[in-house]
Image (cartoon, helix red, strand yellow):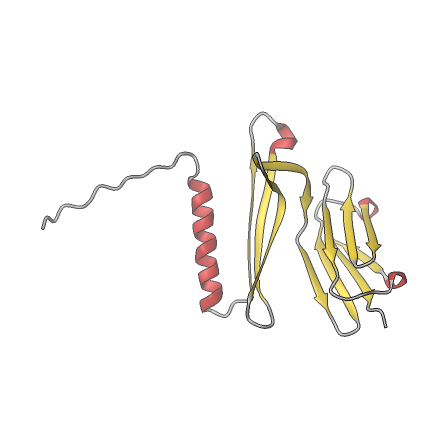
Length: 170
C-alpha cells in the first residue's frame, strides 16, 4: 500500500455556487433534525446576463418543524419548472404562513418592495388569492383548511408583511 495521496479532481462547470448552496442547505436540514431547531430559511438571487430585469431570478426555501415534529418545506421565488426546463417568471411567489386557530384563519405573506395600494386580495369559496401590481409582482393562491365568513376578512400591511384574518364559518 502506498502513502501517496489520491489526486483531487475539481470540476466546477460554473455550478460551484449552486452545489455549495445545496450542500449548506443539507447541512442546515441535518442541524434542524439534530438540534431541535424550529426553522431554516435559505434564499438567493442571480441574473442572466443580457436579459435585464427579466433575467433576475429569486429562489428560496423555508423549512419549519410543524407542531407534530414533521418538517414543512415551502419554496418561494420566481423560478418555475416547465417542460422546457427552468424559467424565470415575471411574478414571484411570496413566502406565506397559514395559521389555523380555534376561531379564525390567519394568513401572513411576505411582500417586500410593494405598497399597500398595490395589493389585491380576493376570497372565492375556500381559496384566497393574493396579487400585487407594480414593479415587483407577487401572486399566490391559498387553499383554506375550513370554510370562512367572507365578510370577516380583515387586512393589515406593515413593512412588507401582509396579515389577513378570516373568521371560520359557524
